[in-house]
Length: 412
Image (cartoon, rainbow, N blue to C red; front, side, top):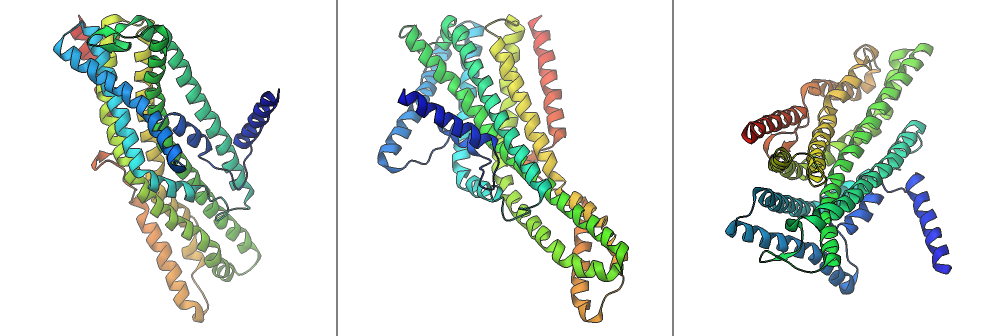
């Protein structure tokens, strides 16, 4: 009875925490739960914690080693094309997941600094009602999305375990081509196998969440600058517009320009994280789609192949979200320049007190520099190879379609 009450109390506290936004709310609260569950990252406290964490990760390492053994066995003892495609496809997918986790672990201290910056809700526009509302809605929506994605992954795990694991030999635990263990062993093996799928999805969510929160903060900055422009225009109707503009513009713009500098610095850090992740995501998608298309073309859509169809959709969706998320950040400078240009400052600042001439020239030069940067975009690249944009995703779709067409002709 006590345990039931304790569980109900913890559940209520947890639901309240993820649905009610405060100044101390953590945008990454759901990520921190699932990155431990899927063995992506955990900060152990003491050597007991460290040993348990390494043992937990070792379970996934053993699954990976089992597929290395299967791959070695298949290459030396050829089987039918369906089994070979299954084993090689899973082996490549696991390798991609481990590489992605390694990249995230390597950059985690940098990601933690960016998370601290984005979780600081008190240093910028703390009391602005529009900003508080946008952050609160984003907080609730993001938590719901992550829970939904992980719920879908759980459903796919059940589907995969009930069909592919229990009916196809290549997904069972094997040694030298022979099945090892009964159905309880195979279920645990299948669940841990699909745990790699959760690692892959959560690894992507960690990056996409950073992109989304940066976009939110960019939108808040743009809206704040537009509010400054609207308030100055309103005040200009009640007095000497030039004097009013001069008296207000410096103090009003200072926190927003400081925020802009901070965002530029953090976005440079973001580029170093997104680059290698995008490289792995983009170029591994071709091989995964090729394997999935080969299986679908050869055996059609069935209870066995539905998992491959879902996997292909997941890879394409993640590629789209990655390119779209980067696209939303690339035009930060043009958006700032456009907003500053709308201030009509060239007319408003046509006169000023002579003793303020130095400050006047400084502000005008700053605004001119911001406007002159309107054609400069923030470049995100695939680890230095190619540029991340919606054009990249369009090329991915075009090449995937060409590959599918080729496989269909080959199947005939």
